[in-house]
Image (cartoon, rainbow, N blue to C red; front, side, top):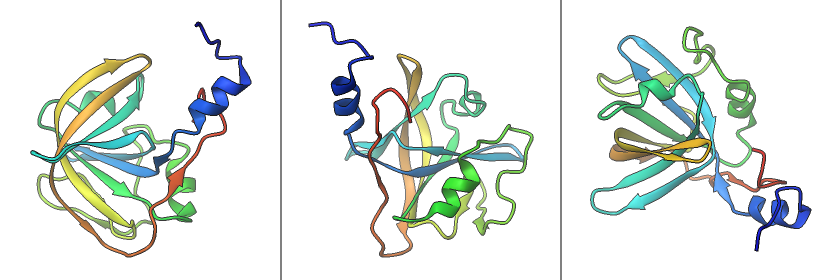
Length: 161
């Protein structure tokens, strides 16, 4: 059976796959950035690893090479301030964290202090997946910093964020 993307039932069903909302932060040398992401999943217990899908062409992809640090900042329900801040995206030469409380640790990507929690990771591998790249990161540290519910995201269509 060949289902067409124009089929509204197919697009609706695909969009019903729940995901969270996260801010991925990355650092390369003295430079740092952040981006909104939703396709994140734990993919291993030992070692603890996560998968993150990043659309090809995103400026941050060249930074996400083997061993590079990135942080997944977990959003709580209703943290719309992060959506409005990171939703438009940033070029790599723009300051991405103006007006936000950020913790910076040596060798790590920025941690958003007001997020629900965070996972500091190192890129383990990357794999092409259609119009995205799957980045597998090994979790090296993390914490839950609040007790709110994580933001669960349901898309209206499986063909758009």
